[in-house]
Image (tube, rainbow, N blue to C red):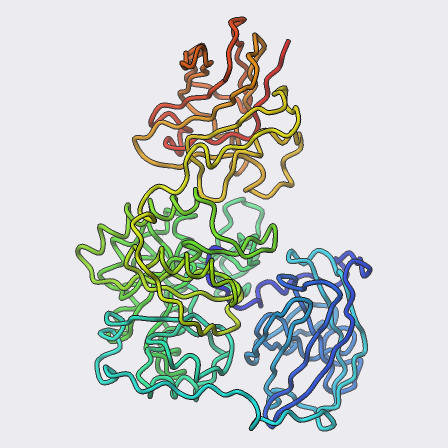
Length: 613
């Protein structure tokens, strides 16, 4: 994911009636429960791996089918939060956060730890549902799971492995902002408890209401700098506010597409908020002050800053919001999550800057933890050199790298730690949902090879396993560069309808570097002759991203020769004749700055075809 995991309340918005059901795709084999003196522990076991599916556990606490959500369900466990139904309409889908829980994935199982204090009854009826990550389909379901809390087997807490508190930090008496500057380690955890493990770190980023205020106080007593999560560019709920916004909601919502409804983040299902709106800034400052004064956090972690990148006209408002935070909380550390383009203006008011998925990441398409593609590593390195390194010369920011990996994937974690150390950044590895605390002895070792370009044209090339798009089998498709997350495969996948494809599968995009020529080449085992070259340009928000200046070249005797010099193209499909001269390759070459009007340093292509006749 591109930002830290936050409350899933904004994602719980799909009515039961709108879901398609395919219960045979995934089976819930069992739900087993135990308890401690203070917590209910239950495990959902399936016949296939469940991460990162959405697991919803609906709970009836009063045996009243007419109360709560349709079916009598009063509570909902989803993600790492517990919700209570508070809507007037039983057929609606309205829930309010009432507490945090801890969740852990392990292959085909997911285990939850729920504070018993949040349960108003000890006799429960539960329904477990497994949904696709986009909430469109119920893949598996188990109904009428009966739990009697008082009858559950008790786990002997004395026999459980409890990590003791780490020694008190030597610099505990310094200010929190000073300790952030001196920090040698950090972690990001959005669960509850685990104070012993967390106390080993110099700084921890936590999420309320999952983390109990007493545990926050324990960590602070040990000298750990505690940082509380707050979203600054998105609203998890469709807040009513003053009712002057889209669809009668708060004035801080956007409606760029003019559909009369607030603009929504398609991945997280939260709603983009306009930092130019004084009411939104007031709302956020109030929440930040509450986190520090009531929850007891030392400082705040600002997520979703990048909304000001999606809506660049709101950048002044985002800068003002951070300025307001600093004025309201002069002694509190402020940690920024992303927001590269605003960093030079935000850095003087901030203490730390976080990068996510710098080297190791989680791919939601393949559902696998992995090292980034070399092109993605180069993209991050370019952003570091372009935005972070100039800022560090003037501002003593602590730079944090949060990468995603399995706890036992020591090879990838070591590589990620080494790369972070090479750039001089603090490193932490965590699960994608930030619901576990990893403790390992991996130490990053600087290696100058990480400073070199990781992606080469050869390493990013793709050889056609079969003839497609008019290119013969064995054609090598090779880019000069790739934008982070993109590969060349989409330009020769032969798929005509591209609307439903994930962005990373719908097109190829070059790296976006000022002053750099870019190209996309097709080299053949045997010479070809004649034909036409058809280029279908990528679209973004319905607009074709046509390069304003480019050349079509052919390779003759090992030398690239221009055969077309195109300029001022307007339509999304370009067709160019190829000469009858035998050639061993075709290349689309874009000189520096010749890209689309809105992004002149980028070349963005959906499909390329060679039409023989």
